[in-house]
Length: 155
Image 1 (cartoon, rainbow, N blue to C red):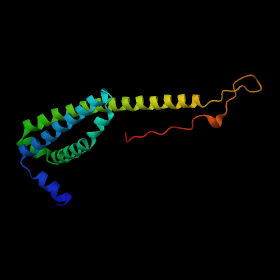
Image 2 (tube, rainbow, N blue to C red):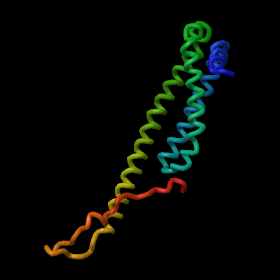
Image 3 (cartoon, rainbow, N blue to C red):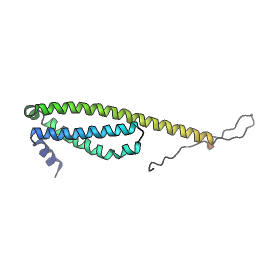
Image 4 (cartoon, rainbow, N blue to C red):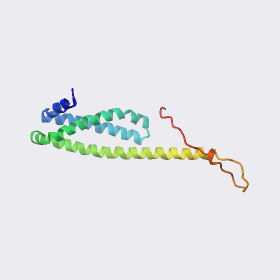
């Protein structure tokens, strides 16, 4: 089935059915994002990353429904105003959940970057020369300091 055929099939669904499908996708997306946020807050990065493919799929599904609803807005407003109102409320909860999810992701990223920076500094300090130079100060060879670290993400 071509993309145009899929869009036409979505647009031709009865108003209540289209709204119900969008609500279902929206609720599932909000739930997965909530699970991911909870795991990230607890520091379970690997477990949270397992949810990424499902979150991506649900987001794509929801966007397809949302675009169809935008295209069919007048028809849906006439034929299913209550369902459309529920979708608007659900979309607001998605926006709230996304904002929280992004805030937690940004915090996790910042913590990770800070941790890696601290590790690099400690590794660099361990490589400093321990001998005194002519001036009586510890001589520092810049070539011996840490040039970087490698992180094995497969663990």
